[in-house]
Image (cartoon, rainbow, N blue to C red; front, side, top):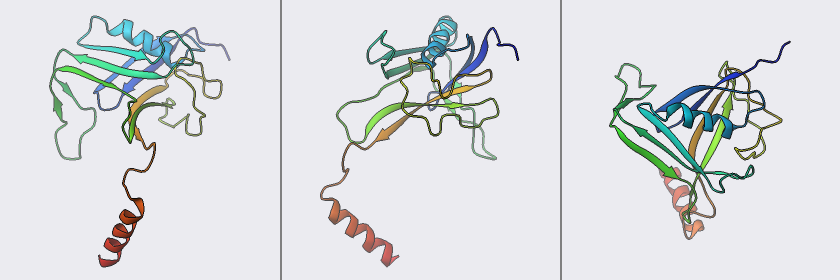
Length: 172
């Protein structure tokens, strides 16, 4: 089977109302895709930018995603029987990390051309490195999501909260 000269890969950012497909070379990293999207959107209505925690370091993690929508945007999905939501034009940006609990962290997932999750059991791979276990393929989609990771208990004292929750469960 011949190796394709380029791959079409889609980058999507959940909650920022952004999706863009670009061409990349085989062996590309998630960062390579993101760099192509930065270049491709520089003069469009929705401009994509990002910042790594340690720029130009292949083992760096994502720090910030920013998208400027020059025009209002519409969500891709809506509730059945209801119109899709409209969101105003403007800058949508978020930086992960900080000293909060839970801590906001950017995570990416890779889906194949059929929508199957390729990276379900993936070990943590910085976005600047190619992933040998899950190399990008033609038709793949990279989805960035901002998630909260608990870095410790979120309630003090935890025992009292658990007792209160148990009491609520038994009283109905």
